[in-house]
Image (cartoon, rainbow, N blue to C red; front, top):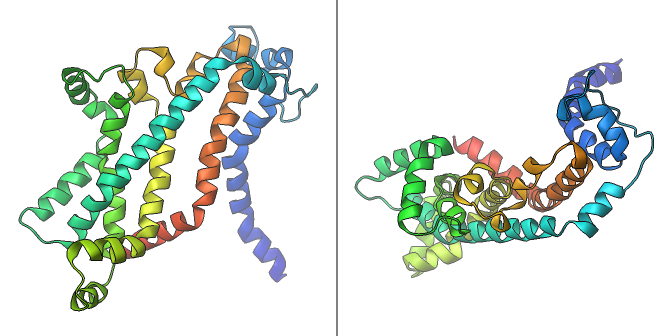
Length: 282
């Protein structure tokens, strides 16, 4: 009876997990479907055909044609893939270089206007891209950076979101530890490098994971600031997909998911620690 009750408790969670994972199963089944089967299912939606759209998680004639076509016969895919890698890694490096010292300074130093700066960070963090799009466009245009990767990288490097995440970790470090380091003769820089960064590593990694996922999947920023298609990241490869090559779209979506999934799984433990620590601090 106890096992039955326990199973009933977990049943809603299992159903919710299945619902969340359904888009992934949907994409995987689309990868191994033949083109005629995809047209039959999605023609009413993407091709203007009569009837109702339908779907099956089990293909009638499984094939890897779409995956092979992306990997062997789509040079544009690899150009956009490496553009995404370049943009994401540059954003991640910039957020680490500038965000970690900024978060440490806000968390461990008292100065006039500190609360106002924190409030400003929160306000900017809550603003959607549509609000900041025009000011960013004007600044980038004035600097001559439009239609370059820097137009996407620089605004993301100085995003307030990673600073806010790391700030919560640095502010949770006990003051007694820092005071002990000062007594031992450590200066501010040494405390930051040898005490703050190691103890705040979970926050830094958590910020890095979330920053990578955000930059890897960004769509609006490159659509606004990049006009040359050879500069586009992989996230803009999918909007060009139509009914004729919908199988290629499914294959590209799965391949695009792989780096983000690997990054998430490699830092999942740190990310969980980060979420828990932020919740406890809040």
